[in-house]
Image (cartoon, rainbow, N blue to C red):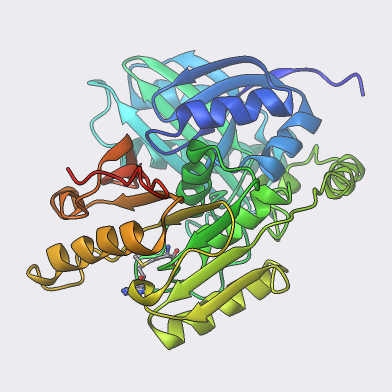
Length: 384
Ligand SMILES: C[S@@+](CC[C@H](N)C(=O)[O-])C[C@H]1O[C@@H](n2cnc3c(N)ncnc32)[C@H](O)[C@@H]1O
């Protein structure tokens, strides 16, 4: 297309940086560099659309548009005023500022954000004689300000709503797992659709849907209604349509089962609705069952789940985690099992030898993602 390459930043959850880096490399990103909770890369406009549509482990993709030194609010105001905002978005679009400030020169990120907002509004007023409105909840345009010491980077958020909002989850259960985290866990496990997949405490079905999208190679954002870049003045609708159409040609076939259980009937109904929204009702089977009464389906199987935590009586949790270990050992011989939990103490009660342990963050919550290999036949998993 002869489009120009530029730098972008994809943000992610702690612990998923390398997974995101790999996703970006496979997608064709250039000059990929990983940092804490993010990956920097280069690509053109089409690649930015592709990255937003495909990436499973990115929360948002920022496009830096300006960089300057700044030591006080007036300098910030002047620098922001000098950006041709009227070339970036229309005056009838709403906007919001997201500011991160790590600097002795600025005490309040809120105040910095306010000055940025004023600078943009005043620029529009002087050039267009009209002003765009601010909408902090559902803005059309999101502007990201990052101030570190005396360095300020101004970026446009090309994603809009966080990319974990895939568009299929209309039914929310208690403690649903973040879609980005769920996809990252599946990627970390190495599962690509080569075996059966079971989430025996599936809640609203997030892990199951993410697994199906991975197995069939369906873009993570295919059900999203909108991306931030669609509101930019330079939006190339034809190019984005082409990228979406090409994406649909990449679907793979899948020859195994994806199964979910939940003990709570209303939750099973919620999972069914979300699965239907994702158009996987003919692929994912979910039924009401107590995990402790279930067995591994026939054939090679990977089990992955996040058991309840925090919502139970403290005395019940160790018993429950012990039952998880016992069920895996007795009913799931030959399977690989992965559990994520923020209850590090309870995890010890599973009583199985861990073959991998990864530290991940679910937002601010520190978790462990652990693997147990349930050997079949004589080579039983040893108890710790
Ligand atoms: C933390 S939630 C799982 C959230 C899920 N990953 C999601 O994205 O919505 C734990 C789920 O385990 C279910 N559960 C608790 N005990 C169970 C059991 N013995 N068998 C099956 N499901 C169980 C609960 O009903 C709850 O929906």
